[in-house]
View (tube, rainbow, N blue to C red):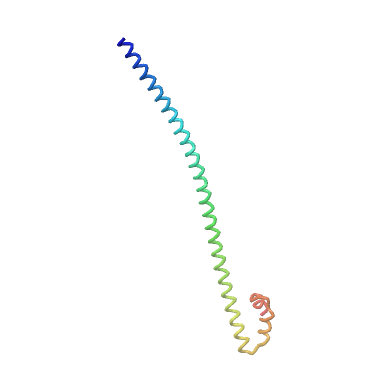
Length: 116
C-alpha cells in the first residue's frame, strides 16, 4: 500500500501543479492583454502629444508674426501721430483755420494726413 499511497501523492502533486500552471497561464494572458492595451494607449497618447506640440509650434509662429505686425503698426501709428502733431502745430502757428477745418472734416487720422 505504501507504493500506492506514494503514487496517489504524486498524482495529487501533479494535479496541484497542473492547476497552478493553468492559473499562471491565465494570469500571464491577462498581463499580456493589459500590456497590449497600455501599449496601444501609450501610442495614442504619444500621437496626441506630437500633434499638440505641432499645434503649439504653429501657434508660436503665428504669435511671432502677429507681434511683428503689431510692432510695424505701432511704428506707422507713431510716425503718423508725429506728422499730425507737426501739421497741427504749423496750422496753429500760421493761424491756418483751413487745417483745423480739414482735420475736423476728416473721417480718420489717415484721411486727414492724406488730405494734407
